Length: 74
Image (cartoon, rainbow, N blue to C red; front, side, top):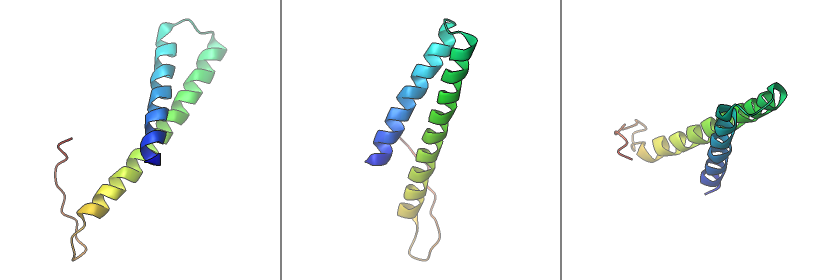
């Protein structure tokens, strides 16, 4: 559950950063700070997704240790 909350929160912050940057209303210094924050949020999202991917692979691991990859149908 912590991964979902962390991912959801980071994704929301990333979306807000994108909106601020797209607005064009920021000074150069403000834009740089918002961009930097967005990069950090994107990295947090990436790490969260990697953890989830590992968990899914572990769940799909067969008794003989091989992975049975199945398409994700969301």
